[in-house]
Image (cartoon, rainbow, N blue to C red; front, top):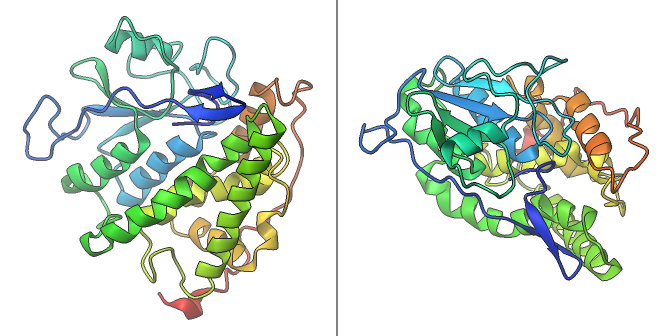
Length: 313
């Protein structure tokens, strides 16, 4: 799922997201058509997209850079979709020489007619897309590629699986997808409904994080890395561009400290590219920002001490 893809339709003024199409699974035991192997699979992403950001962070935290290659598309997207080309923070496709990501979709399914989205896990051997669902890919990287991971990290500890899923049940529709339901609403009622639900959930998170360092307690899990890409974009994009402006994230002491805590984890800051994020939203969404002017701010001090160590390591 992703921001710029707008893989959705508007029904009754409300933003409705389309389902992901490619849901094959990579298997660590070697079974099936897609056995886990170093160097066989390649990840296509946008640094602007919060859904792709989840997979970028997972790949980095697990230390899978040597096992799974990655290419970044141009953050500015036109009617032809996500494109490959040389620019700051992005470049040509080194695997297949695609000019547009749509070519990967059509190579995998010549009849594909839905939205072209990131992230995409590409099988270099079979020449097709394996999976384009970020939640699947987080689990695939965490479990099926564990043998190739440079870091011993488990984002889905069995004892916390229930909590992770329970958190996602209300965080995803009201916050992760909620900012889009507000930003792309075409009726006042749909917009106000989405914004009220969004800030009710942010208020709930603020209260939850007053007593625990991370969403499930003292341990960082997939639940945190699913939430982080939305929160890190909030003040820079969603507050203004999507009119989610009841409060800024910096107005929430616990939430803002939590975001800084996650941002300062080893390797995470390098996955955050505000240039790509802001240029994508403000230049691509011409129906919302027809002037295509990209704001200079906000100035965010993400390196300030989080002040959350007292809640546990």
